[in-house]
View 1: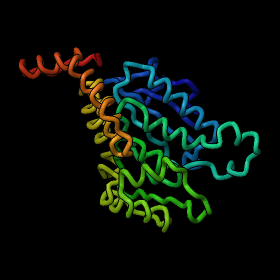
View 2 (view 1 turned 90 degrees about the vertical axis):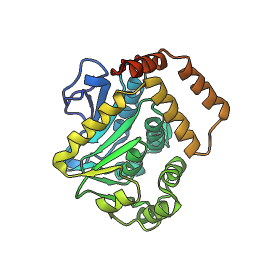
View 3 (view 1 turned 60 degrees about the horizontal axis):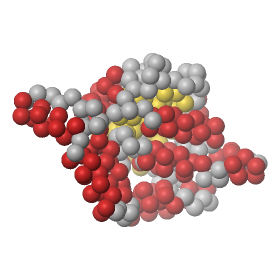
Length: 271
């Protein structure tokens, strides 16, 4: 589904890269592409609002089973447009934490998410990718978080995400030293799940997206939320038991067991 023209800074396409007529492309996959390649896909306030809108529409579409977030050109994203940090007080007051809220909305999305890192990642985009469930990068990419060089104290939920997902030592290295890390090191510290040559990127993303889309949506969504809560130290045993009970009573579980017994592929409905 494309809610804006294909020349705008953000577009939402189907799995084949075409503007889709519905939210879910083939296999229940949706793709959001950051599309400002001449500026390394930096994000302006208007882009963040558009991204929030896309995420809300995906969340409301039961046909979407997996989301792929990627960029166009030679970089994934250069983060927030620093020129807008000094914009008028009125614009900033509309939502002074717009970037943080957008990244948090991505992490909170119920469907599994994949960051298709087609190139280097800078600034706030490092957290945008980290908010996804999986990150597939290409050889030759780099990552840099320059907050300390700019005099910025990074926002709370982003710091928590880095510490909970990568560990305190890696988070301090990225934020306090503001050094650039190469792709091999990003794989070693766990920022990347997979590292491939550029020509293998699409095949790797397709394989992962297909595996996620083939699993039971109700179980995937529930366990994703529970795992993220556990990682943040915010888990509630009662909520986890509710999700467990919902899956135990679901048509998907009955279908999964029947398919296993019949040695066939299950056809899950998310109910």
